[in-house]
Length: 392
Image 1 (cartoon, rainbow, N blue to C red):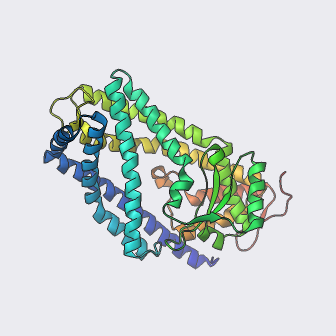
Image 2: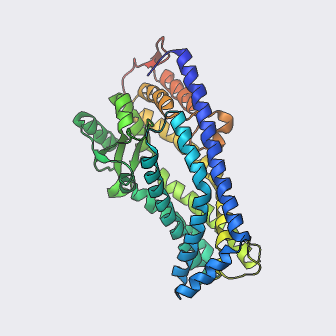
């Protein structure tokens, strides 16, 4: 990785351009979904699919699945052009290495998982609304959050559907990370190398899963660029999320957000305020589905802003945990600079409310302040040089 200031400024400008383009593509995807739902409903396909479902089965939940399938196909078709454009943007910025065929196969797998997740949410909401008319929205909000929690628990398996995952071959690094987890009082299983370099240059590390299923995963792109000290610093941050119970706290916040969203939608259903439905006061009306899906996604945009505020505080706390666990901030600082260049995700303080992480520049600045306060001095390159002893 380069230390030339001119090149660093070029990388920052490139990162800002890429981040802005990704954000714009996300908005385009949302707009495509909105237009798909609008067209689907204006053409009366929601009523047709509801009638079709009742003709082929008498099971209400199979009927809901049939209606969801038709709506999902419509949204998928509308979003496909944006997905294709997204792929070529990634190629332009040299983030993607896949050919079109392999990219399309990955896209189909990702959309299939999203279909299953969406179907689960639909079944939960309609089951709770139909079975418990008075308080079903509360139960649905809790169950939807548990579904997200369960998805996090099986994250290592989900990742293996897209990328080869194998045991980390570096015994020295593996032992260091296991000792680090023990020092953080976090129980982890095997350490895996997550092989994504054939698809992208992006790098990442995560501690995925819950309880006995928890695993440390490191991308091969990360391992090829970061030193062992830097990898340890990044993993220490991820362990901080576990040690500080951030997953549970986010689950609680997400549950409250889902309950509030579903409470509002339930009110709309009961008072004939749901879009694309002439008159309905019951969750057993499957023509509600497009309106529900639209309101759900619109409300989750605002819910994500609230969740993002919590997530950014958690990220700052996990950063501090990392520095304290490792005993110095230098490896974290140099690792973050390398990851910024690899991942090209650059946004400023005034736009961080759109994201789940604080601005990287602010995180590095906070780490530099911590390093100076703990006796780490900075060399000519701007990187801190450790002069004090590590914390126990």
